Image (cartoon, rainbow, N blue to C red; front, side, top):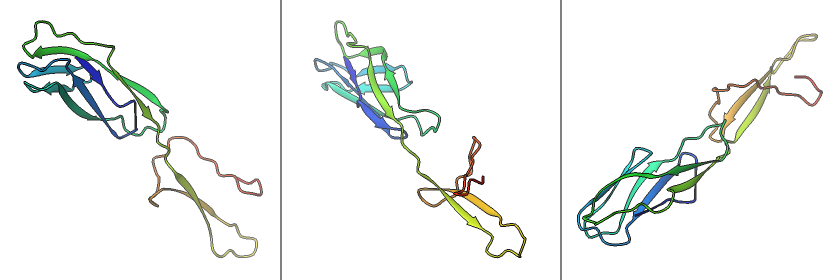
Length: 145
């Protein structure tokens, strides 16, 4: 039995693992994967699949790889069922989160008063981004922060 997966997916996408037998199964074959998933290949078939979520978007993790292996096999009515290869490896592509800075200022200020600037972060949908874990500095054209 051989386990394959897409070579690459985006964060938060789906990974479909496909198990392929070289001969038809005499009875249902159950394959356990080291990610906790199970693939069943029905009797008379040679292919079974399971789809799992890819790791979610993480702003701290760039592109990474995930390798999944078959850890246990049962059924099939084979004399000996061997696992071929070293598992299935998928590259998890980092998705870029677009964030804009919206700068606003007080609309009127008395002579000698202070102008108050407010920098707000918004995502691609215009929603406020509030889960900032690192300091953010906005530098204006005049060099002020």
